Length: 300
Image 1: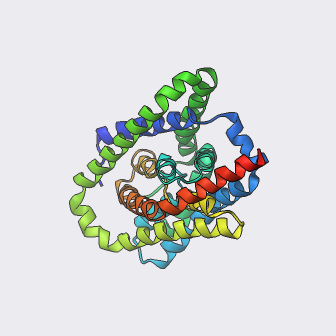
Image 2: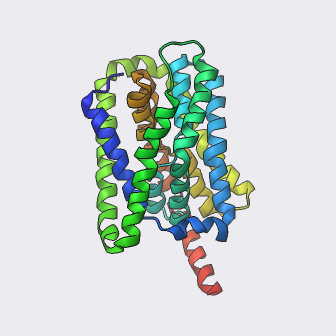
């Protein structure tokens, strides 16, 4: 898969903007939510950081994939949630605060969890293949600079200048989303022939992963006795990943262009399933949101 200088430059810029925008939506109080209302957060973290990687390994094992595509499925499962899940949660009247909190937690620890999970994927599926290798310490350092550092910068802006954060938050999200869409579309367009050749082999795997991840997130939440609105939000966090980060890791850190094919297509596919699910459940979610607000007013 071809990337090119524009992609290699544009991807880290897009990710940095996304993380700063996410940070500007957060305060220290959002992380204290873990202590005040731990059940939905714990359920979401388990689904995102434990359930999803295990699910990715299961899918990669069941489908007869070439090693590089099996590893790319693991790469998707190792990535944190992104702003896409936050946007769709907001659009569909899901639990916005829970969505942002879960996304923040998964992105805060990604520089540690992603290298470990991806190395496990290399060891399990790549074997002695020379075309895939993981510079572990480099990946940890780059992910720290690319994710946690801009997230903290955004939070600092929020803490010191909340008026500036309020003005910049939505425009920065919109800009980053458009930039992501352009980058993913560019990658797909440049590699149309290769994608058309290989898609029948790996398409069913990443489609299955996405659908199972959505169902797994919802199921984990319901087992944890969460309400429908919270369960739906956790499902989105488990099923909608930061595919832009996966593409960046594949092209820039690992340096294997083929590793980026599945994340690029997954990024487009998850938008379809995410918005379709949101449109289908939106009326019920609005009723659930109204009920939550009424219950909170009664308690107050």
